Length: 246
Length: 100
Image (cartoon, rainbow over all chains, first blue to last red; front, side):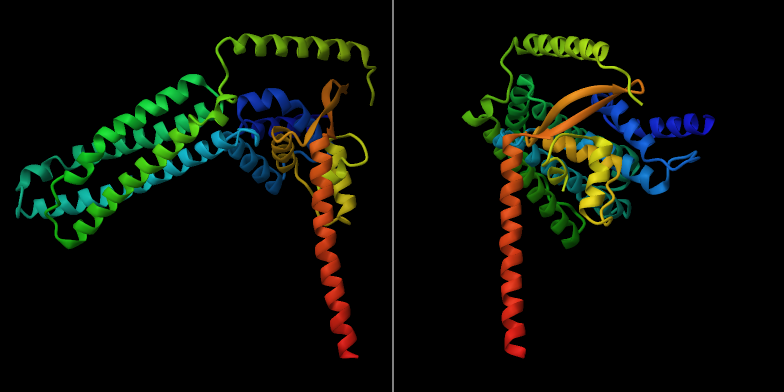
């Protein structure tokens, strides 16, 4: 009996990797399946089993949950994940560029030692800036994937802001650190442009007529809530009715 | 595979695991995590739906069934596999015939 309780506690801990919403909905059921599949006297979840649960749980958290019927929104959400990847790549290239630049500056060839003194600050600001970018992509992917009406608008505003920045991406002073840095610099500019194009395509898809049905009109939250309550009532009454079986 | 397990009636999670193992002759052992990711996706795509819910040993047990779209998908997929298998067998027979 305590073996079973131990095992169940182990499984519960692993289920924590799932999104809370999914866990509420399916947690008990998965637990029942896991317990049914356990060997006699098993006290701890197996390694492969644990890996499978954690992998599935994390995947559930990350992947878009847009139904196949909303094709345009699905594509937009995927593009946003691609955008996040582009931003992450930009972070790395930009970081390489900064470090290269600072190394040259530290040798006193161009900007002198002043830039080198700000090394930590410049690198930190860059990393924070890029991580904010990646987070925005992921946040928008998630919120749009959930059909939030505001997310579509915020995405559009972000895209417009990026467009205003686009000119700046190509007119930044070229690095002082020679040809290697120039490659990096153009790499970064190309990535910025790629991110902009991806964002533009995503926003375009979000505003396609086919996407409209997916974004819930205001007031539908109430309808959804009522639906859930009715479902819950039905469940309660069916629980009360169904006899316990072993 | 999961759709096949549901083809002749609704099943609950553990039932699907057992069934898939049988269909595959013991080769495919679905794990609970994989199964529920797949069920969630199939539900989102409206290929399966919850048939009914029961409480067994104080735990909720859901039975899943194919939707008409799921049945169609399974039939299409089966037809495709059959066509591929037939093509392979035909060519093998042809090659065998030429060798003898």
